[in-house]
Length: 344
Image (cartoon, rainbow, N blue to C red):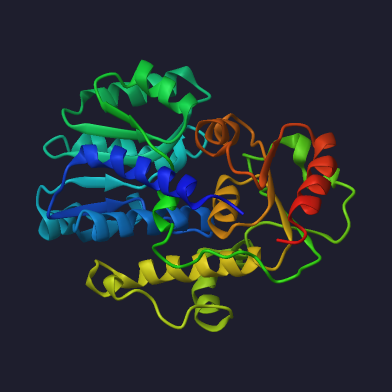
């Protein structure tokens, strides 16, 4: 359904950009997603595999945030080795806990390189943006990767003392790494509206305005049904489907169980998507996972520019995706994709 050279080019572009950070023997990898957003676990896994498989770097310390971060333990494990901060869509004041942890780390550790993996940037408050810019620009060796054009413009204008590099999202590192590619050959009748309902929901695409499509199922990531991260741990151990084994590389990493958890969550997301013939998603990693799996899908905007800017920057050439700005266009786009790929 898609020319493999297109996806290879995206991954090559990712590697070319990331190559600017050089190589290092070991590192700390911070801001682990200790919550149930499967998209952020795709990012984490992509980062882990890039660091270990491509850079041959040993991840000697990890932490999710302020609550479980230990300065003493990090120093013991890695000394003054580089700090890598998780990518995603939380650089800004929309998800303030992530930004507060990031600013704390950048302020405190000016004696070693810090790398922020590909992020989207959004600040509602100009004063919060200025505060972040002052902290970032004061660090003598900070590299900030951004994952779409709009964020790149903000970074170039505001974080001008940092090294700014534009690359695709880290989840594209999973291409051909985990053998998750699927032609979606199983004949399914249902359509999934993969709908986030948090503060990134664009109101025009709320579940209240359900589209008139047959066999439509509305749900977020399957993991959202588990309500809390703590309760999910027992569910992850007992519920199907999950892979029979996890990569051996996890055993050599700091806190192997968190990486195994991300691995299992990824496979649950894959199993969720493979049940449907067409997916409508307002999540960026719903879009990316559909691309990796070869599933026809409609990509909707979120509450700010992130989704549309990412699509325009990197993925507008995907033939089995339609980006839709108006809910009135969804039914037309769905019918077009179903006709084109009904025999795929």
